[in-house]
Image 1 (cartoon, rainbow, N blue to C red):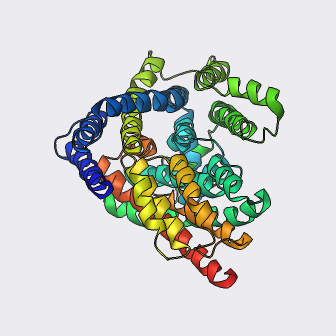
Image 2 (image 1 turned 60 degrees about the vertical axis):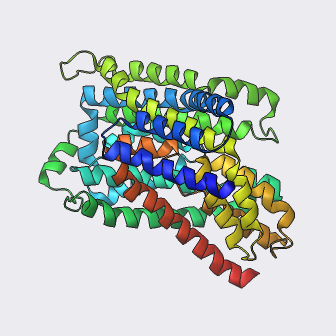
Length: 442
Protein backbone atom coordinates (compact mmCIF):
# COMPACT_ATOMS: atom_id res chain seq x y z
CA UNK A 1 0.00 0.00 0.00
CA UNK A 2 2.77 2.45 0.88
CA UNK A 3 4.61 1.80 -2.40
CA UNK A 4 1.37 2.24 -4.35
CA UNK A 5 0.65 5.56 -2.62
CA UNK A 6 4.22 6.77 -3.23
CA UNK A 7 3.85 5.94 -6.92
CA UNK A 8 0.54 7.82 -7.05
CA UNK A 9 2.21 10.80 -5.35
CA UNK A 10 5.03 10.81 -7.92
CA UNK A 11 2.48 10.76 -10.76
CA UNK A 12 0.58 13.65 -9.15
CA UNK A 13 3.80 15.68 -8.80
CA UNK A 14 4.42 15.16 -12.51
CA UNK A 15 0.79 16.05 -13.26
CA UNK A 16 1.16 19.40 -11.50
CA UNK A 17 4.25 20.22 -13.56
CA UNK A 18 2.58 19.18 -16.82
CA UNK A 19 -0.50 21.28 -16.10
CA UNK A 20 1.67 24.34 -15.44
CA UNK A 21 4.13 23.82 -18.31
CA UNK A 22 1.86 22.44 -21.03
CA UNK A 23 -1.67 23.49 -20.17
CA UNK A 24 -0.45 26.89 -18.88
CA UNK A 25 -2.65 26.68 -15.80
CA UNK A 26 -1.84 28.89 -12.80
CA UNK A 27 0.35 27.08 -10.29
CA UNK A 28 -2.26 27.05 -7.53
CA UNK A 29 -4.89 25.50 -9.82
CA UNK A 30 -2.47 22.84 -11.10
CA UNK A 31 -1.51 21.97 -7.51
CA UNK A 32 -5.15 21.81 -6.46
CA UNK A 33 -5.97 19.40 -9.31
CA UNK A 34 -2.94 17.26 -8.44
CA UNK A 35 -3.91 17.23 -4.77
CA UNK A 36 -7.44 16.07 -5.50
CA UNK A 37 -6.11 13.49 -7.95
CA UNK A 38 -4.00 12.03 -5.12
CA UNK A 39 -6.96 12.17 -2.73
CA UNK A 40 -9.10 10.17 -5.16
CA UNK A 41 -6.44 7.63 -6.15
CA UNK A 42 -4.64 7.02 -2.85
CA UNK A 43 -7.30 4.70 -1.35
CA UNK A 44 -7.65 6.79 1.79
CA UNK A 45 -10.64 8.54 3.35
CA UNK A 46 -11.96 11.30 1.10
CA UNK A 47 -13.35 13.16 4.10
CA UNK A 48 -10.02 13.13 5.89
CA UNK A 49 -8.24 14.22 2.73
CA UNK A 50 -10.64 17.12 2.23
CA UNK A 51 -10.08 18.24 5.80
CA UNK A 52 -6.32 17.92 5.33
CA UNK A 53 -6.35 20.19 2.27
CA UNK A 54 -8.29 22.88 4.11
CA UNK A 55 -6.15 22.60 7.22
CA UNK A 56 -2.87 22.65 5.32
CA UNK A 57 -3.98 25.62 3.20
CA UNK A 58 -5.10 27.62 6.24
CA UNK A 59 -1.95 26.89 8.24
CA UNK A 60 0.36 27.77 5.35
CA UNK A 61 -1.45 30.99 4.50
CA UNK A 62 -1.44 32.01 8.16
CA UNK A 63 2.25 31.27 8.51
CA UNK A 64 3.62 32.38 5.14
CA UNK A 65 0.87 34.55 3.66
CA UNK A 66 1.40 37.63 5.83
CA UNK A 67 5.14 37.44 5.18
CA UNK A 68 4.51 37.30 1.41
CA UNK A 69 2.35 40.43 1.63
CA UNK A 70 4.91 42.19 3.84
CA UNK A 71 7.76 41.42 1.47
CA UNK A 72 5.73 42.61 -1.53
CA UNK A 73 4.89 45.89 0.21
CA UNK A 74 8.54 46.60 1.06
CA UNK A 75 9.57 45.75 -2.52
CA UNK A 76 6.94 48.11 -3.93
CA UNK A 77 8.14 50.87 -1.62
CA UNK A 78 11.73 50.43 -2.80
CA UNK A 79 10.59 50.58 -6.43
CA UNK A 80 8.48 53.68 -5.78
CA UNK A 81 11.37 55.59 -4.17
CA UNK A 82 13.94 54.41 -6.73
CA UNK A 83 15.97 52.72 -3.99
CA UNK A 84 15.70 49.31 -5.66
CA UNK A 85 17.50 50.51 -8.80
CA UNK A 86 20.20 52.32 -6.85
CA UNK A 87 20.82 49.30 -4.62
CA UNK A 88 20.90 46.96 -7.62
CA UNK A 89 23.52 49.15 -9.28
CA UNK A 90 25.64 49.29 -6.14
CA UNK A 91 25.56 45.51 -5.81
CA UNK A 92 26.06 44.82 -9.52
CA UNK A 93 29.33 42.81 -9.34
CA UNK A 94 28.54 39.09 -9.22
CA UNK A 95 30.97 38.39 -6.40
CA UNK A 96 29.17 40.86 -4.13
CA UNK A 97 25.70 39.67 -4.99
CA UNK A 98 26.49 36.02 -4.34
CA UNK A 99 28.44 36.70 -1.16
CA UNK A 100 25.63 38.83 0.23
CA UNK A 101 23.04 36.20 -0.74
CA UNK A 102 24.90 33.40 1.05
CA UNK A 103 25.68 35.46 4.15
CA UNK A 104 22.13 36.77 4.37
CA UNK A 105 20.61 33.33 3.89
CA UNK A 106 22.72 31.73 6.60
CA UNK A 107 22.16 34.63 9.00
CA UNK A 108 18.37 34.50 8.64
CA UNK A 109 17.99 30.72 8.72
CA UNK A 110 17.07 30.72 12.42
CA UNK A 111 13.56 31.82 11.39
CA UNK A 112 11.34 28.74 12.02
CA UNK A 113 10.07 28.69 8.40
CA UNK A 114 12.38 29.00 5.40
CA UNK A 115 9.44 30.17 3.28
CA UNK A 116 8.74 33.01 5.73
CA UNK A 117 12.41 34.04 5.71
CA UNK A 118 12.54 34.08 1.90
CA UNK A 119 9.24 35.99 1.64
CA UNK A 120 10.50 38.71 3.98
CA UNK A 121 13.78 38.85 2.04
CA UNK A 122 12.06 39.45 -1.30
CA UNK A 123 13.25 43.10 -1.31
CA UNK A 124 16.84 41.84 -1.06
CA UNK A 125 16.26 39.67 -4.12
CA UNK A 126 15.16 42.81 -5.95
CA UNK A 127 18.25 44.68 -4.78
CA UNK A 128 20.51 41.77 -5.81
CA UNK A 129 18.74 41.11 -9.10
CA UNK A 130 21.59 42.01 -11.46
CA UNK A 131 20.93 42.92 -15.09
CA UNK A 132 19.40 39.79 -16.67
CA UNK A 133 16.91 37.00 -15.91
CA UNK A 134 19.83 34.65 -15.28
CA UNK A 135 21.37 36.90 -12.61
CA UNK A 136 18.02 37.37 -10.85
CA UNK A 137 17.46 33.61 -10.79
CA UNK A 138 21.08 33.09 -9.72
CA UNK A 139 20.89 35.31 -6.64
CA UNK A 140 17.34 34.36 -5.63
CA UNK A 141 18.00 30.63 -5.75
CA UNK A 142 21.37 31.06 -4.03
CA UNK A 143 19.65 32.94 -1.21
CA UNK A 144 16.95 30.25 -0.86
CA UNK A 145 19.58 27.50 -0.81
CA UNK A 146 21.57 29.25 1.92
CA UNK A 147 18.43 29.66 4.03
CA UNK A 148 17.68 25.95 3.64
CA UNK A 149 21.25 24.91 4.50
CA UNK A 150 21.35 27.11 7.57
CA UNK A 151 17.97 25.89 8.78
CA UNK A 152 19.02 22.26 8.34
CA UNK A 153 22.38 22.44 10.10
CA UNK A 154 22.96 25.55 12.22
CA UNK A 155 21.85 25.58 15.86
CA UNK A 156 19.48 27.09 17.13
CA UNK A 157 17.39 26.54 13.99
CA UNK A 158 14.22 24.56 14.62
CA UNK A 159 15.55 21.45 12.88
CA UNK A 160 18.86 21.44 14.76
CA UNK A 161 17.06 21.96 18.06
CA UNK A 162 14.68 19.08 17.31
CA UNK A 163 17.43 16.60 16.40
CA UNK A 164 19.64 17.71 19.28
CA UNK A 165 16.86 17.35 21.84
CA UNK A 166 15.71 13.90 20.74
CA UNK A 167 19.20 12.47 20.15
CA UNK A 168 20.62 14.16 23.29
CA UNK A 169 23.37 16.14 21.55
CA UNK A 170 24.93 19.20 23.19
CA UNK A 171 24.31 22.51 21.33
CA UNK A 172 28.05 23.21 21.11
CA UNK A 173 28.67 20.01 19.13
CA UNK A 174 25.74 20.82 16.85
CA UNK A 175 27.29 24.22 16.16
CA UNK A 176 30.75 22.78 15.50
CA UNK A 177 29.32 20.32 13.00
CA UNK A 178 26.56 22.48 11.58
CA UNK A 179 28.40 25.65 10.61
CA UNK A 180 30.97 23.96 8.31
CA UNK A 181 28.26 21.77 6.76
CA UNK A 182 25.99 24.75 6.15
CA UNK A 183 28.84 26.67 4.52
CA UNK A 184 29.80 23.69 2.37
CA UNK A 185 26.19 23.09 1.28
CA UNK A 186 25.69 26.79 0.51
CA UNK A 187 28.86 26.98 -1.57
CA UNK A 188 27.95 23.77 -3.41
CA UNK A 189 24.54 25.18 -4.24
CA UNK A 190 26.05 28.51 -5.31
CA UNK A 191 28.51 26.83 -7.66
CA UNK A 192 25.82 24.68 -9.24
CA UNK A 193 23.45 27.61 -9.73
CA UNK A 194 26.16 29.92 -11.10
CA UNK A 195 26.98 27.21 -13.65
CA UNK A 196 23.42 26.20 -14.52
CA UNK A 197 21.49 29.49 -14.51
CA UNK A 198 23.19 31.16 -17.53
CA UNK A 199 22.95 27.95 -19.56
CA UNK A 200 19.38 27.23 -18.63
CA UNK A 201 18.13 30.76 -19.30
CA UNK A 202 20.39 31.23 -22.34
CA UNK A 203 21.80 34.43 -20.97
CA UNK A 204 25.40 35.61 -20.56
CA UNK A 205 27.22 35.16 -17.29
CA UNK A 206 26.47 37.79 -14.63
CA UNK A 207 28.26 41.03 -15.44
CA UNK A 208 31.10 42.21 -13.27
CA UNK A 209 29.91 45.82 -13.31
CA UNK A 210 31.03 48.72 -15.47
CA UNK A 211 31.09 52.47 -15.67
CA UNK A 212 27.31 52.73 -15.80
CA UNK A 213 26.94 50.67 -12.64
CA UNK A 214 29.58 52.71 -10.85
CA UNK A 215 27.92 55.95 -11.91
CA UNK A 216 24.58 54.83 -10.53
CA UNK A 217 26.09 53.46 -7.36
CA UNK A 218 27.46 56.92 -6.57
CA UNK A 219 23.87 58.16 -6.29
CA UNK A 220 23.03 55.62 -3.59
CA UNK A 221 21.39 57.47 -0.72
CA UNK A 222 22.05 56.72 2.92
CA UNK A 223 18.32 56.15 3.51
CA UNK A 224 18.20 53.48 0.81
CA UNK A 225 20.01 50.96 2.98
CA UNK A 226 17.71 51.73 5.92
CA UNK A 227 14.64 51.36 3.72
CA UNK A 228 15.88 47.92 2.72
CA UNK A 229 17.25 46.68 6.04
CA UNK A 230 14.81 47.94 8.69
CA UNK A 231 11.52 46.44 7.41
CA UNK A 232 13.16 43.12 6.53
CA UNK A 233 15.92 42.34 9.04
CA UNK A 234 14.15 43.62 12.17
CA UNK A 235 11.10 41.34 11.69
CA UNK A 236 13.44 38.44 10.90
CA UNK A 237 15.40 39.13 14.10
CA UNK A 238 12.16 39.21 16.08
CA UNK A 239 10.99 35.92 14.54
CA UNK A 240 14.36 34.31 15.28
CA UNK A 241 14.40 35.37 18.93
CA UNK A 242 10.77 34.35 19.37
CA UNK A 243 11.45 30.95 17.83
CA UNK A 244 14.35 30.44 20.23
CA UNK A 245 12.24 31.56 23.19
CA UNK A 246 9.53 29.03 22.36
CA UNK A 247 11.79 25.98 22.38
CA UNK A 248 11.01 23.26 24.93
CA UNK A 249 13.51 24.54 27.52
CA UNK A 250 12.01 28.08 27.48
CA UNK A 251 15.43 29.82 27.71
CA UNK A 252 13.84 33.28 28.10
CA UNK A 253 11.22 32.17 30.59
CA UNK A 254 7.48 31.75 30.19
CA UNK A 255 6.83 35.50 30.11
CA UNK A 256 9.47 35.99 27.41
CA UNK A 257 7.97 33.14 25.41
CA UNK A 258 4.44 34.56 25.62
CA UNK A 259 5.38 38.19 24.93
CA UNK A 260 7.68 37.40 22.02
CA UNK A 261 5.19 34.84 20.74
CA UNK A 262 2.57 37.55 20.42
CA UNK A 263 4.83 40.06 18.66
CA UNK A 264 6.08 37.36 16.29
CA UNK A 265 2.58 36.50 15.06
CA UNK A 266 2.42 36.78 11.24
CA UNK A 267 -0.28 39.48 11.36
CA UNK A 268 1.73 41.55 13.85
CA UNK A 269 4.85 41.19 11.68
CA UNK A 270 2.88 42.55 8.71
CA UNK A 271 1.76 45.59 10.72
CA UNK A 272 5.34 46.04 11.92
CA UNK A 273 6.66 46.06 8.34
CA UNK A 274 4.00 48.50 7.14
CA UNK A 275 4.77 50.85 10.04
CA UNK A 276 8.49 50.85 9.22
CA UNK A 277 7.75 51.44 5.53
CA UNK A 278 5.54 54.40 6.46
CA UNK A 279 8.24 55.82 8.74
CA UNK A 280 11.09 55.50 6.23
CA UNK A 281 9.38 56.39 2.96
CA UNK A 282 6.52 58.79 3.62
CA UNK A 283 8.48 61.87 2.55
CA UNK A 284 10.31 60.19 -0.33
CA UNK A 285 9.66 61.28 -3.88
CA UNK A 286 8.24 58.44 -5.91
CA UNK A 287 7.92 57.67 -9.57
CA UNK A 288 4.81 59.77 -9.91
CA UNK A 289 2.48 56.79 -10.18
CA UNK A 290 -0.23 56.15 -7.63
CA UNK A 291 -1.53 52.86 -6.33
CA UNK A 292 1.84 51.34 -5.40
CA UNK A 293 0.31 49.65 -2.36
CA UNK A 294 -2.43 48.14 -4.50
CA UNK A 295 0.20 46.85 -6.92
CA UNK A 296 2.04 45.24 -4.03
CA UNK A 297 -1.09 43.47 -2.84
CA UNK A 298 -1.88 42.29 -6.37
CA UNK A 299 1.68 40.99 -6.75
CA UNK A 300 1.31 38.89 -3.59
CA UNK A 301 -1.92 37.09 -4.58
CA UNK A 302 -0.45 34.43 -6.90
CA UNK A 303 2.43 33.29 -4.64
CA UNK A 304 0.09 33.30 -1.65
CA UNK A 305 -2.37 30.97 -3.40
CA UNK A 306 0.38 28.70 -4.74
CA UNK A 307 2.13 28.31 -1.38
CA UNK A 308 -1.19 27.76 0.37
CA UNK A 309 -2.27 24.97 -1.97
CA UNK A 310 1.22 23.44 -1.76
CA UNK A 311 0.72 23.34 2.01
CA UNK A 312 -2.65 21.66 1.52
CA UNK A 313 -1.13 19.11 -0.87
CA UNK A 314 1.61 18.36 1.68
CA UNK A 315 -1.04 17.89 4.39
CA UNK A 316 -2.81 15.24 2.27
CA UNK A 317 0.48 13.43 1.74
CA UNK A 318 1.20 13.52 5.47
CA UNK A 319 -2.32 12.26 6.21
CA UNK A 320 -1.72 9.19 4.03
CA UNK A 321 1.10 7.99 6.30
CA UNK A 322 3.03 6.42 3.42
CA UNK A 323 6.30 8.18 4.28
CA UNK A 324 6.41 6.57 7.72
CA UNK A 325 5.77 3.11 6.28
CA UNK A 326 8.45 3.56 3.63
CA UNK A 327 10.77 4.88 6.33
CA UNK A 328 10.36 1.64 8.26
CA UNK A 329 11.54 -0.24 5.17
CA UNK A 330 14.59 2.01 4.90
CA UNK A 331 15.50 1.66 8.57
CA UNK A 332 15.50 -2.12 8.13
CA UNK A 333 18.50 -1.78 5.80
CA UNK A 334 22.09 -2.10 7.08
CA UNK A 335 23.68 0.88 5.41
CA UNK A 336 24.97 2.75 8.44
CA UNK A 337 24.96 6.51 8.02
CA UNK A 338 23.08 6.33 4.71
CA UNK A 339 19.97 4.98 6.46
CA UNK A 340 18.95 8.18 8.28
CA UNK A 341 19.90 10.24 5.22
CA UNK A 342 17.76 8.20 2.79
CA UNK A 343 14.86 8.04 5.25
CA UNK A 344 14.86 11.81 5.85
CA UNK A 345 15.19 12.58 2.13
CA UNK A 346 12.32 10.22 1.32
CA UNK A 347 10.08 11.70 3.99
CA UNK A 348 10.89 15.28 2.95
CA UNK A 349 10.20 14.45 -0.71
CA UNK A 350 6.82 12.97 0.20
CA UNK A 351 5.82 15.26 3.08
CA UNK A 352 7.12 18.59 1.79
CA UNK A 353 7.93 19.75 5.33
CA UNK A 354 11.47 19.70 6.69
CA UNK A 355 10.29 19.79 10.31
CA UNK A 356 7.80 16.93 9.90
CA UNK A 357 10.40 14.87 8.06
CA UNK A 358 12.99 15.58 10.77
CA UNK A 359 10.73 14.73 13.70
CA UNK A 360 9.52 11.54 12.02
CA UNK A 361 12.99 10.36 10.97
CA UNK A 362 14.61 11.15 14.32
CA UNK A 363 11.81 9.46 16.25
CA UNK A 364 12.23 6.30 14.17
CA UNK A 365 16.02 6.43 14.32
CA UNK A 366 16.56 6.91 18.05
CA UNK A 367 15.76 3.32 19.18
CA UNK A 368 17.78 1.89 16.24
CA UNK A 369 21.03 3.78 16.84
CA UNK A 370 22.73 0.78 18.41
CA UNK A 371 21.78 -1.57 15.58
CA UNK A 372 23.15 0.91 13.03
CA UNK A 373 26.42 1.41 14.93
CA UNK A 374 25.60 5.05 15.67
CA UNK A 375 24.97 4.92 19.41
CA UNK A 376 28.22 6.65 20.42
CA UNK A 377 28.31 10.43 20.84
CA UNK A 378 30.05 10.87 17.50
CA UNK A 379 27.57 8.52 15.83
CA UNK A 380 24.60 10.47 17.17
CA UNK A 381 26.12 13.70 15.90
CA UNK A 382 26.72 12.24 12.45
CA UNK A 383 23.20 10.78 12.38
CA UNK A 384 21.77 14.22 13.17
CA UNK A 385 23.77 15.68 10.30
CA UNK A 386 22.63 12.92 7.93
CA UNK A 387 18.96 13.58 8.73
CA UNK A 388 19.48 17.32 8.24
CA UNK A 389 21.17 16.65 4.89
CA UNK A 390 18.20 14.57 3.75
CA UNK A 391 15.75 17.38 4.55
CA UNK A 392 17.50 19.72 2.07
CA UNK A 393 15.70 18.12 -0.90
CA UNK A 394 12.74 20.23 -2.11
CA UNK A 395 10.29 20.11 -5.01
CA UNK A 396 6.68 20.95 -5.95
CA UNK A 397 4.99 20.00 -2.65
CA UNK A 398 7.22 22.42 -0.71
CA UNK A 399 5.78 25.98 -0.43
CA UNK A 400 9.31 27.40 -0.72
CA UNK A 401 9.56 25.93 -4.24
CA UNK A 402 6.72 28.12 -5.52
CA UNK A 403 7.98 31.17 -3.66
CA UNK A 404 11.38 30.75 -5.34
CA UNK A 405 9.63 30.41 -8.71
CA UNK A 406 7.68 33.63 -8.17
CA UNK A 407 10.56 35.77 -6.89
CA UNK A 408 13.08 34.44 -9.43
CA UNK A 409 10.49 34.79 -12.22
CA UNK A 410 10.94 31.17 -13.31
CA UNK A 411 8.38 28.68 -14.57
CA UNK A 412 7.82 25.43 -12.69
CA UNK A 413 10.04 23.27 -14.91
CA UNK A 414 13.00 25.66 -14.72
CA UNK A 415 12.55 25.96 -10.96
CA UNK A 416 12.70 22.17 -10.72
CA UNK A 417 15.83 22.03 -12.91
CA UNK A 418 17.57 24.86 -11.06
CA UNK A 419 16.37 25.05 -7.46
CA UNK A 420 15.34 21.43 -6.84
CA UNK A 421 18.42 20.08 -8.62
CA UNK A 422 20.58 22.39 -6.50
CA UNK A 423 18.99 21.05 -3.29
CA UNK A 424 19.90 17.52 -4.44
CA UNK A 425 23.49 18.68 -5.03
CA UNK A 426 23.54 20.21 -1.54
CA UNK A 427 22.25 17.00 0.02
CA UNK A 428 24.78 14.84 -1.87
CA UNK A 429 27.73 17.05 -0.91
CA UNK A 430 26.62 17.13 2.74
CA UNK A 431 26.23 13.37 3.11
CA UNK A 432 29.52 12.80 1.29
CA UNK A 433 31.33 15.03 3.80
CA UNK A 434 29.61 13.28 6.71
CA UNK A 435 30.52 9.88 5.29
CA UNK A 436 34.19 10.88 5.04
CA UNK A 437 34.15 12.14 8.63
CA UNK A 438 32.37 8.95 9.69
CA UNK A 439 35.16 6.84 8.23
CA UNK A 440 37.56 8.58 10.61
CA UNK A 441 35.35 8.59 13.71
CA UNK A 442 33.30 5.36 13.60
